[in-house]
Length: 253
Ligand SMILES: [Zn+2]
Ligand SMILES: [Zn+2]
Image 1 (cartoon, helix red, strand yellow):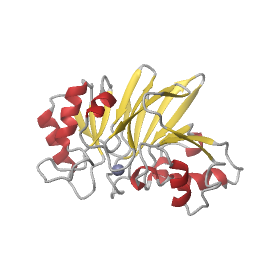
Image 2: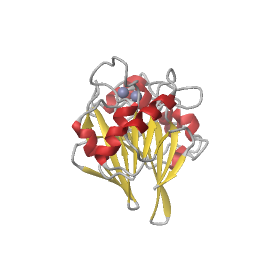
Image 3: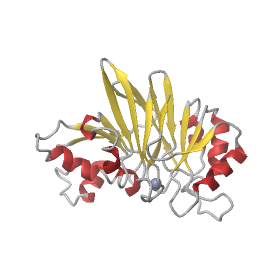
């Protein structure tokens, strides 16, 4: 499985990166299958540097905050009004209410909203979702809205993604045995952080250790912080291989 970081900026796009979006690719039955994990603000533009977005097979949304889903609006226009004709309906997995949320985001009536362009499906915790070679499991995590961590397996490799989450036991379940853990660090560890929202760099390091992952990639650092602070905090909590996500980075798992 190949991972390309399309966007890794936390909460809003930064000068060097869109908000959250990760491209996963896996060869299967004679072609490359592609899924997008989140499609946050600014990501659809950057995605076109790496791949034709019309070759994407599904979109997997961790939650419905703007920095994780809003570029589905542009993707809707691209698919519906493309000069070569409208594209086939595309599966979009997300929390309950995704169809209505995206209709409102584009100022469409909720019926039909985007339901002719996207086949909206709701995560069921514990149930495995199959998309070509990808097997995806969503685990409910702790955030102010319905949010999921994702385990994506393909080609014998496992990617774990925290989405946005505070520390919670479910995150260990998300990350256990992952070849690569993409973990969000939005807060400074020493700060007086509001509860129930986000992780710190040290939380990410502790999670990597508790879950026994091979490699940690820190992501979702907001542009107002220096990401090296989050990495240093993670390395203080875990001695394994850890690095910062950056837009355009690729990983072979
Ligand atoms: Zn976020
Ligand atoms: Zn969020």
